[in-house]
Length: 565
Image (cartoon, rainbow, N blue to C red):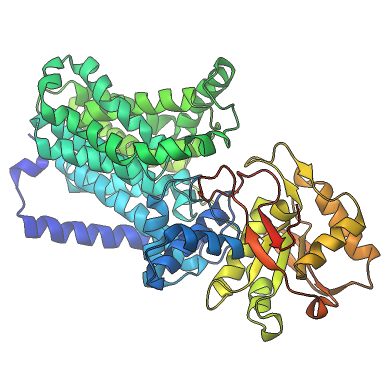
């Protein structure tokens, strides 16, 4: 008999408890991101984070703009001014969530990070309510605390990335399917389908949920479920809602995979041991072994009681299969979506083991906390800075009203400048903040197939004067492996064309806590105000009109007329 069945709670009590737990979890998550420095850091911990920040800001502006009948036209215009949009490369749900949060609390980096902390708190609350039914309130509290302290959860609670909302939707989906296995109700099947849709439209890794029903059938042998209409309901929902999106964007997403565009043995042989090792690193051996025992004991329960454990077990297996077969990239962060379920299994495991040995559950929970604290507890710092303030000063200076700004760096540096400029621009969109990696070169999402379109200083100068580019922002803090020919050419341009370019300012920047002295330099084209203003236009590839950040061949953004290619 579960602890919750002894003292059943009324709905108002359950709601009040959930709100209190959510508030406590949010306070702890916010404290975590504060201790990490994420509230004052730039949104640039990973290459994708600046794009997520800018895209969420675009969605926020669209929602508040009132003109909702031409979303693609709005997105094209916004992208034209701030070319760091990732919609199409990623599905829309994450951007909708953070866009709504920004509409309520502002577009600052701190506000966005607190939105991620709130989503983490939602994950922790779902975990608490599940564990409360299984092991009681104290065990649920331990589960919530361990989850919030996981290094990967800390890291992505303070980063504008898809991992945390993906973990939320996958956890809700798996628990809903567990209830379906226990009760066979249409409502639980519908909940699983809706949460699966939300997860899949957050990130493609949630497709692992599609393996849960067939694996659960094999695991339980309950093939009679195939005759139930409720069994097929989630598949219908996913096909109707998600298939249209992925049928259009699958090629875009596959072009960014680092292991190839289709499953291959070489990638799988490399990915399998890497992900198995990442499972250990995520929570340590103690947590992993406790989770394995918890799954074993939970799955041995009778029909009607073991649904959540069976659903969790097959989800873990399905996720591993997906990550090993799909050659996107090998990265431990892809396991974050399983973290709430893993912690829940571990807490259940130590409670069951304690009872099996005749000990109070508190002893097992204390041991779990001790092992976790010794093995895994640490604060993961986030420290990027120096980009936002200089660009905000430029876009707020009346002298550069609607001026064209070009930034040259790597994906993180260019993204931090564009995000800071967009946040400081008012009203948006107003300035054009172009990327050298769009205007001067072409490559794919991962920087492959690099091609420089302008070979000489004269060609480069003519290209910049055609807009004209009033301000040139050069970032020399990038990794030497990401320093390309156009960076060298731009450096030569400002050095050798001193009659055309003047240095306005230089600034220190920080990356992962390392300070790069005077690495961000801002130059002004001396005669930019006397040059004719060209129309800045957008060229998309493939004719489908979707916006994706690194899809098109050749310069995406070009002046016209005449058009410069």
